[in-house]
Image 1: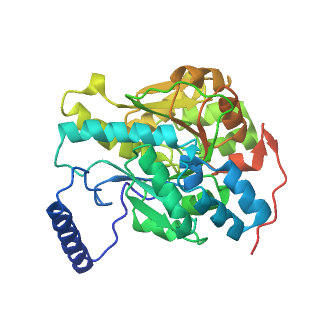
Image 2: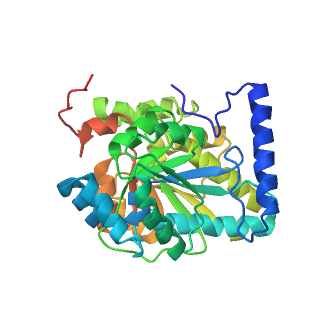
Image 3: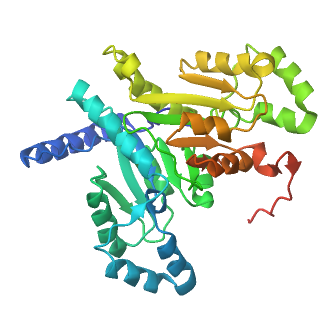
Length: 363
């Protein structure tokens, strides 16, 4: 099954023109309000990033109350502390970096809606909203769209917002989103904090089962490296199928090209990295040719030939690093990299190369 393209568009034209009229009316109403705050772009034009409240803020203490004492005590605690801003969580630096890109885009293209739109997607109850809003205002974050689903799954809302990336602490919700063709990952907080760039959004991706499908990974797991090398040489000119995060890289590329068009390539506030365990000489060409066939550029490609990723990521200092294998995530976090696990493909059945027992699927 193909992942969704940049923006799924399956509406009938009459429904679409009605929606266009609604947006035009909403824009006119907003413009009449005379505000210095930029109006949030409409989802069709924007690159929509949905973050959960537990990725944006550190809510470990609150979560503990929820798990040990139940929902009512949790809501009461949040209301009692609603004037105390929550501490930043793992997605916080990433969100700040997105906002910086928007500032630069608005300088170059004052009227364009091709921007990042950050949506807070939380299954918190609305009563908790005041503390979340107070925290967002405390840090001066531009997040105007909130979905508070009161315990319900957010997946339907993610689709309605044409979400390009969903970050959550719940692996279950992330798997649901990926199943619906939405790029998604489970965020982890690193053991130490690295100083990150505040002028450039830096995003690092693993290759197989993240940007690409897990078709080659299956061969490694089932037949070993030598067969894999032969297979990749043989199919060097056949592009790999797309993986769950390909559409997010595509969306980043679309915004990067807006800077290139204004001769800002050397000063672009978005930089992308491919960090793969593949070896360059024996299996690298297929990856690069696949990206080329998609019309996508990656700024830096790092082929580690099985070396650990943590030390290299420490040098790159990405705001977020996506990988499908937990031992790479763990290695990255130990050395301070903010990491996001993509629970997709055959890698989920293995740990450090060994097959793990699979839980029974619930019907």
